[in-house]
Image 1: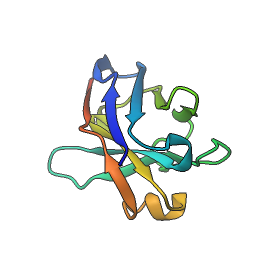
Image 2 (image 1 turned 90 degrees about the vertical axis):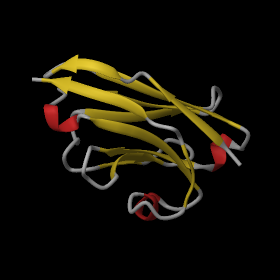
Image 3 (image 1 turned 135 degrees about the horizontal axis):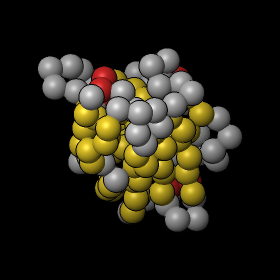
Image 4 (image 1 turned 45 degrees about the horizontal axis):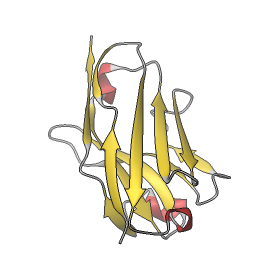
Length: 125
């Protein structure tokens, strides 16, 4: 089963940028759709963005469209989330996820095979 480790979280001011990375090991990375989810205190985990196995298709939550970009490098077994124009409401623990289902299914949180441990993103106003 694939193991996922996120990095790149931290503290940033409103309007700033962060780039999260997720390194995968122990599985066939190119066989998985990959996604990013987040969970803020007192809220349910929500889908942020997803990318198909070959990077051809991406999907985003409406709240981050135009600000966040997901990408992957199958040669390096990594998936990244570039976050620009950050807002206080983007503050959360961000989780990387691997799935063997379509993005439309994965974005519901269904069919996820593996989750990372999460990385904290804090946005100061």
